[in-house]
Image (spheres, each protein chain N blue to C red):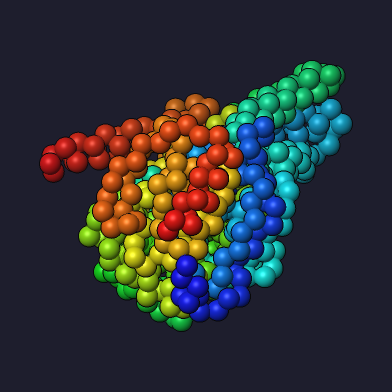
Length: 271
Length: 276
């Protein structure tokens, strides 16, 4: 096992996995307490439009996906900022239209694109060193923004109307949260693929939410759990020659089920 | 009339010809009213009558389609920071990762510095506010561990921590038992020496002796500058479907509403208040 760790592609995979885990732990916690998991799902799937654009115009993938995801995030923020009753429908429409755009653009691109599946299901073992550098920069950006605006983000997550009365700039923060989601999505696409991103966004934050007394701790422990899931999943996928993204998610899901069942049994026993 | 109770005749809230509707449904129609500084106002009316909407308009959370709103002499968007707000009890998010003390600290958001930390002074203020509502021993607990009444008191502390000039409370007595309600009213009366208080209640029986004036809301709004409810007001408010106990005149008696047209009701009301 040790010699495997000396292979450059494995080192890149581990670094990318850790970076994506941190991004998803932080932003996933924010999304879970904000109850905007569906919005994050919409952005993650609509990001496929960015993949289509990159293929069709033969552009570098990561910058294209970042640009397109941010565009989708801003559009979604603009359409949902007033918190009206049909928000979920609009998210559903953006979700589908983004993906469909990507699929059509890929169809129109001449030749067969093997790399395509890697965006849907992730290809952590194929992450180039240059992507690791970009991911490091993006994680730093996420951490700095969340630390700087921590109280404001906590405030609008807990009680948006009250924050508004206190003069908190609710609308710019709403845009900011969705842009942070877009950035975290882009980072995670390489690791687990855009279809499976939601698992890293939700499973760990949901698990730790009940046991933490602050959003910061929730973000920390969710990131730590994500790292555990990614590294364990990576090892399993390497050992048994399985698709890495799906293995990571199933590792997380198994942990989730075992943990919740144990917790439920413990509660019953204590009664 | 209890004009002598008004410490300072300066208006803290002014509404001129304010109308508000959600889509096609008219919630408030042509509301004009002035609340003087130092008042202790109860907003009463049936469920769905527009009480919460009226408070949200005063705070600038909702923008009326027509009319002008002034809070502390300014448009609410500029002055709402100087108000304290305790929203209607929400079932809340039991698992939300936040401690009681942190909820109260969020009452200082908007005046605090950037970054994740609160300074010593802010924490002292939050503890003082918790102490005022008797929640200091619970400061380190997670918000989901509290009972409904304890959560209400925490949200009151959050509204008070910024030392507001005017305090808005939406159904503050919900989830609080009768003994707790008396304690809460006494606390509000003490606070009323320093700040104007506006509170919403659907329970007319909750008009304590501390209340100085009453606003009745049922699409139309009537400002009654004395803490009493006449049977005619009750008719105007509650229409034919409701029945309420009136305790304003000392003895509770049950009033069963009858159907009245608006004109008739208003005329009846006018006569009623003259008789008082």
